[in-house]
Length: 329
Ligand code: TXA
Ligand code: MG
Image (cartoon, rainbow, N blue to C red; front, side, top):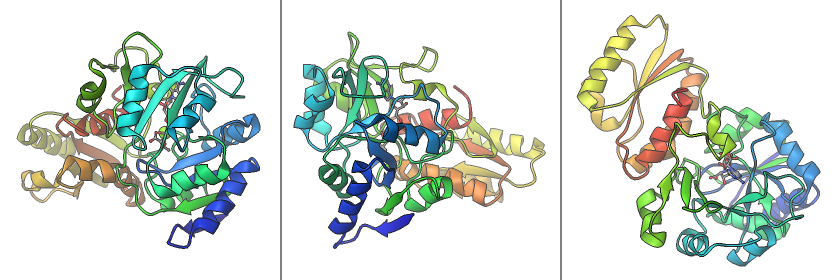
């Protein structure tokens, strides 16, 4: 397998990757959210390889990545006005819309709907352009593991199982795209991300948020997910109260090498305890959260305590992923 830098003279490399996609292979590639594991979305056998490589449950459908708005008609039967307005406002970008699928286009699929997104990031866009087919791509991790935000993470999980990884450095957002369903009466956010509920409401008016206690319409949201190997406990609330609680839990813990994940600004609340700082701004915490969970495994931490973050802006996406990683939902 090739592991290649996307530098200034990289178009040839991307063309090579596109050729692999065209001929039914698997290429991991960087997007502005996380690394994706791409295959020709029009080829059933190629998509089947994605499930095989990731160990992904077969009932969990894939997001289809396109390069330009007009390509929507290749995959969607119909594009509701709200979906078009959202795409116009935020694509290319960390947004996925669920639309009625074009019949007969997809060899795989999930009912009669399709998830579509135009990723940001030049490598992803060039790859789709040169492959000249829609690219189905889930996050390029083993199923259940934290999503990869570097090419190194991809290799940790999938080396030997895929044909190529394009190395585009560290992903900007670090959490997966916001998924918005346009196939029922009111548009609904199935997975929060960098495009927030407020940003969406500004463009299309009312938008609902799927709650943890309703059956997930995105099968992927039902599984325990994004999880490190160690046992993980998430404590939510006011920072000083949370810190006291976590230090108490840590004192009672039987773990040999526990660690506490915290926003850097609350460092002083933890004294001499073993901490890992996640950064200050919510955007910074989002960008590094999966990396931090993987690092906990690497460093052999056998128990992880996490201080929750405020649920505003991208904080909503961070908490959604942390709850799933801790198995709380
Ligand atoms: O940022 C992202 O979206 C990344 C990058 C690589 O683009 N991709 C990603 O894919 O996160 P994945 O497969 O890890 O997550 C896709 C989510 C899953 O929860 C899946 O169940 C849901 O989208 N999904 C896909 N197709 C769907 C459909 N037709 N209806 C409802 N949910 C769907
Ligand atoms: Mg995923």
